[in-house]
Image (cartoon, rainbow, N blue to C red; front, side, top):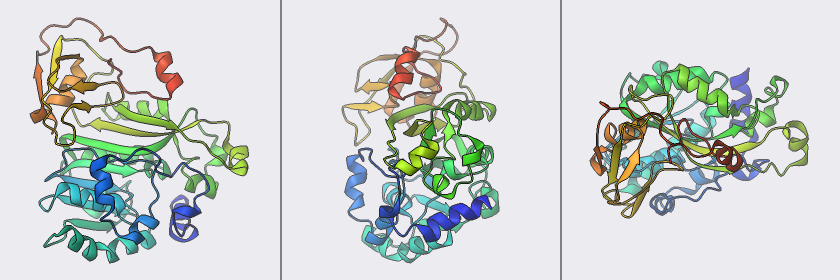
Length: 347
């Protein structure tokens, strides 16, 4: 029944993004220039039926295998297709047949607009809680993306478990979604409008942290956060007890992360070699790497920079033979007040 509610809302109730009743599933975040340039190449029908709350497309996707969870009409899958290049491969997964029909009928024309000789996108109908059923293999994906979809799942533990199953070692989860500042009353969960507007299924931030920790992911990072204004009196009357935030999160599949930041005296230097970031690179909302400037980092950050596809672009010195105690973190009050957070918050 839970799946049917969401299918009904996105397959038959919503005819386009103008039918949304709140700004939760609207992309107000500034879209990176590299992505904005490609948007002009995306077919109108795909854009008109797009429902998302961010721009979950990290850099350095060329040649990667990308998995888009809840791909809908395919906007982000097509963007990823362009960013991976013809040698990359994109799998788009969605459970709603009406959404996938749009994606599939635009596939050939999108590939032609990109100048590709053959399609590098494969749209599959299925459930993000069971990727094995649609033959997404263990350790086969470089980057998992999702745009305001994971909140809709009735079994978030299954979703994140599947994500870390299919990611390669060092692979990245990069997603935008709606988070809540408190737990949403269970009585509101089955409200079809609140569910469809990405509100009643929004994860409480601390429950999300605990979920990832239980799955072995001890650290994740927030790139940006904005407060969602409901701007709808009826919806606010129902669920206005909670604060909602649209956030972009990244997490890596790494075995050596710790549950807090630890200081091993390691230093990272950004080489300035990521094409769209010649002067600086932001790993998250509190790691701003200026090109060629040494920066003291915690052990977790050192691993993220040296054991993932970011490695060629950073020089990381030091190892973990000597420990200097916890790594200095920013004031938690500032993080809470600003609406940002992270599995670790090195400054």
